[in-house]
Image (cartoon, rainbow, N blue to C red; front, side, top):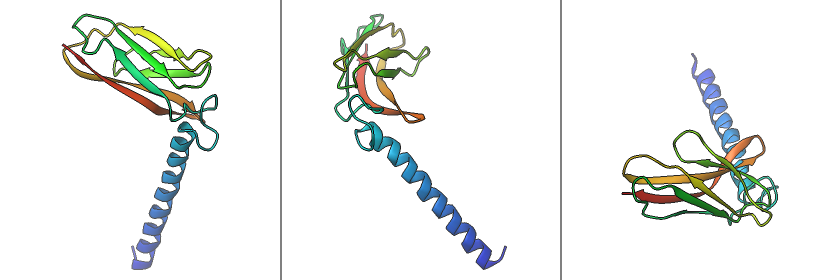
Length: 132
């Protein structure tokens, strides 16, 4: 490959990376309330929060995952790193409470909340907890 073709190929790769970064950034902005997101929009808004109780979790105890700051009646995908992955619906005030049978070994764990933004799911909140 000649030097000119190599530089052209490199320029094309850089341009593709910039376009991909811009598209990915738009999805995150939408989920945080920019460009069409926000409470009641397609994103979850920057005020979305998660909590887990009890924390620490005694081994063999179900956990309660509480969410707030979501859009009214918005679907929220909860990633617990284990299957099945539950989906909950926030109430009219953007809140939910979900009891999850988290029966895994002792240690640190987390749960993430994802909301739909366009054609993808974007993480808008996370909570960490300890199982002992």
